[in-house]
Length: 363
Image (tube, rainbow, N blue to C red; front, side, top):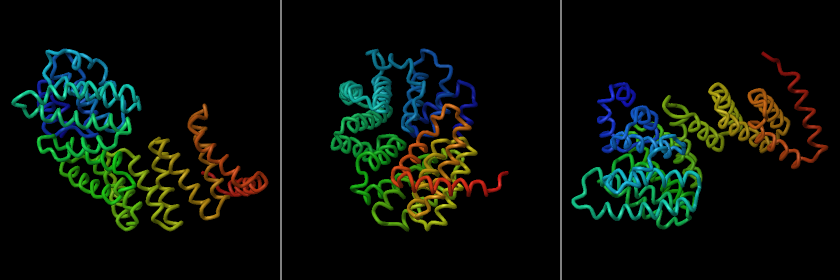
């Protein structure tokens, strides 16, 4: 539906803008929103589309070009409070994404001042109420960067409990509260929050949030000792992949599933993940899966297979990237193994790994 909307003439962009205000924005909305605002003019409603695209992308830890040229939304006192709040939200999220503590503090002050002004506007229209929800979410992010988790939790709870806030914004607040504030020290609560988020994400047809909530819920269920619950949540993401969901979700799922499986099943699962990551050119997932598989072999006492897996992957990454930068994490992992084993043992195992590699048929 979002793709179809983008393909419509630009006169239909108000439909997309209205959807963004009413439903909120999710991670999967960034690309269509950017496309919808591609011919941005000075019209404030088109700048809104760029704000929505920026918020959506930064919820997914992306750094969109959409942030450029939005300063006028925050600096012009004649702009409606909704639009100025959106501009401040974008700049606050960008500072948080960069872990810029000073920038986040400045953004927090600006947000608080604009938010107080917006709340004093009576009667507040629905758009202003939804913009306030985004502002509360951005303030929580600034507080997290500044390590004020108590205030962050209060702001996120305010978003979650406010029925006037767009549903997608409440969804983002649930996921962020579980991941950024609650965490492992309250793992059962994190699981409950993420299960609620998964239900809401399905209702909104937000595929990336469904996968995120599933994988993270499995991670926290595993941390709380519920291996069966962890496996059920992870399997739903890994075994029934959605084309709209980036492969990193399945990668994390496979890594976590290895902790709930026996050695043979885990090795097979990780190998399939490596194959998919290699075909997709997803080097980050490829490296993570190789490192997980290597440590699995080490835990099983099979240092030869661990070294063979690492050395083969290093060679493949160096073929893909002549600079060698991609291979550096795996080179460091191999050096860690060498130091742990000692030179003499390492050289003996390296010779055994080379002999096994030479016996392996090539295709």
